[in-house]
Amino acid sequence: MSRVRVVHSVTQFFAGVGSEAQAGAPPGRKDGAAGPAIALQRALGDRGEVVATVYCGDGYAAEQPSAIDEVVELIAREKPEVVVAGPAFTSGRYGLACGAVCVRVQEKLGIPAVTGMHPENAGADLYRSKVYIARTRETTAGMAEAIKSMARLALKRHAGEPLGSPQEEGYLPTGRRILYFAQQNAAERGVEMLLRKAHGEPYTTELPVPTYNRVQPAAPIKDLSKARIALVTTGGIVPRGNPDRLESAFATRWLEYSIEATEELSPDQWVSVHGGFDTTNVNLDPDRMAPLDALRELEKEGVFGKLEEHLYTTTGNTAAIPTVRRFAQEMVKELKAREVEGILLTSS
Amino acid sequence: MAKEFEAAGIPVAYITALDALGQSVGANRIVRGKAITNVVGDPNLRPAEERKLRKDLVRTALEALQTPVEGPSILA
Image (cartoon, rainbow over all chains, first blue to last red; front, side, top):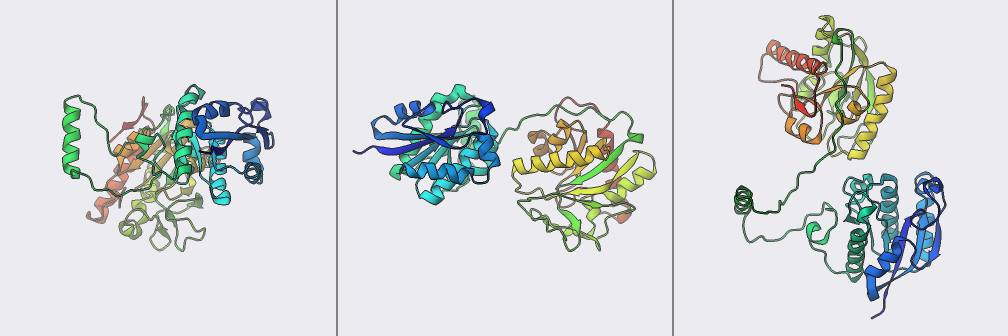
């Protein structure tokens, strides 16, 4: 049996080309296996051969528009049958580069590519539906097992063998739904899980609830009666006609509109373009989503100091978490410049 | 978004009908809204009553901004 030709794509650091300070390093290659590719070669055994290690600095990959094409060009020259990238663990920049390389390899070279990341890597959210991503630990302490997972996935993908469930195979769920006939219906399976849980026995959920990181609560406002408050909504409220084309789902932007001297959000002038719920009630009275009328009353009564003169808005449904995080970071710059001390955020 | 704002040091009162979701995601100051389709309103009420409901919800949220919390909390 001939050995599968594998190219391993890594950040320059793992290829032994300088430290984080050399993150601007352009793409390059080394013959055979270098760095973690040595472990990859061991995991592939006699079924595959790492013919080259291709590397690129994460900074270069993030900043040079041509970087991914350059990396894929280097990979293509090796005539691989499968490409392995990373693992990136929780490194967001590296994860984004790995995901981009894998997608481009699959599209341009028509061969499978796999990578590895921790589920909270920003690249995981963006690429899990396009590329098989082995689930890794947070740090390089998980290198050995990550490499083994990636090697196994790479060989299976190359052989065209169907993959089992994400839990069985150790990859991040791709979002694909695979229909199958279960022996028991959902109610029976649910009750069985509940009984196992009640008896303290192990069970496997069919739909894991994601866990999210925590942030330290901000200190409370000391004197609300003097504080400047901003109104932010993810309810898709925009001026009628949606002049800036806010999306009804998968938002790519946030917008701000002046509400200076506006007493309420009249349905003649404002509308929700949110595509994730029935907007009938909100569109009869947009204050039901962004309560400007109530804020104006409370402002007049002196409950708080002043309402910031813009409505900050986007659409919350199905937005990717890294994108929404960026929206908030961009808004923070504006809000701080406008001396906002507290935010009222509304969503559906 | 609530978490990013708080991480930047600006307290956020988050009104949502999906308060349990807000809590599991990690928003720190949550106020339970009326319903998904009208988070700060209720079309079944008379206009004056609805305005009062909205004002009460917003007042609760503003007060939440003055409230010290240790972690994700539902404040009404």
